[in-house]
Length: 67
Image (cartoon, rainbow, N blue to C red):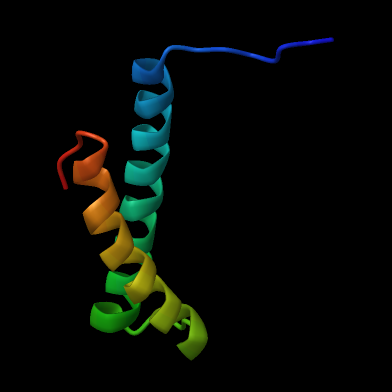
């Protein structure tokens, strides 16, 4: 039976952090474009973006990153 892939916690946290930071930047820019430049964004997506951004602002520092 396969035991699966095992990687050190530091590496896993680094991968998670990189992914969170990348998505955070994307959502911040998408939201900024909508609010400041009038780029169309579905109202539900705007609300969801704001919720996710707030959550990421807690998670990124938890994983050792800076906003």
